[in-house]
Image (cartoon, rainbow, N blue to C red; front, side, top):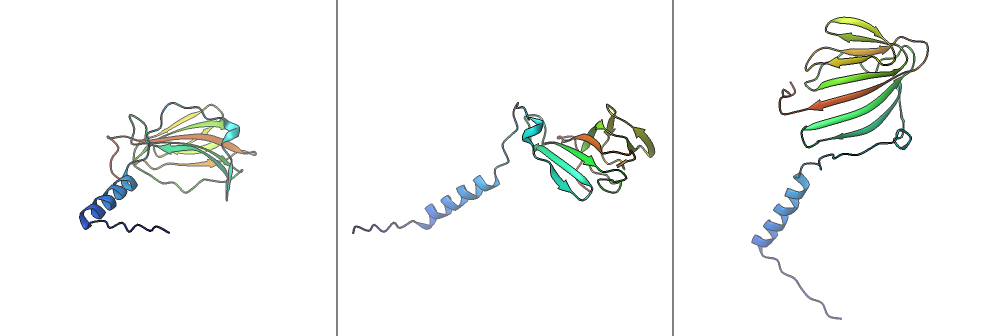
Amino acid sequence: MNRTLLLVSPVLAGGLIAAAASRAADPPARLRSTAFDWQAVPAQATKVGEVRRFFDAPTPTLERLEVHVTTLRPGETSHPPHRHPEEELIIVREGTVESLVGGETHRLGPGSVILQASNELHGLRNVGEGPATYHVIMWRSAATPPKE
């Protein structure tokens, strides 16, 4: 049996380690034009309903673009009112929701659109008798302030 012993110099080894670390630290691939079939994105059960996570990735012009669809059972909220630096667009698909927007509560139904600006307190609750489903589009750009 022929065995070959490979000796690697400390300089070469350091270069290999640095290259591997660089690849591990590379930013995620930027999302390009694509299509997502509703049926191909699995619904994941949550304690208040379910969520379908389409993507959460950088794009050619945004540091982050996230799209998910939440379904809430009657009387449920996805989380308490909160704020974050990313801006968020919510499109109500079905049901009736109550949304905290700019310090006021709005009752909204299918087709309604909610814009949550950066760092403004917001929340959403299903106030209807059936499920409430809404699309969430959230983004981070170079202009988005850092997280507090």
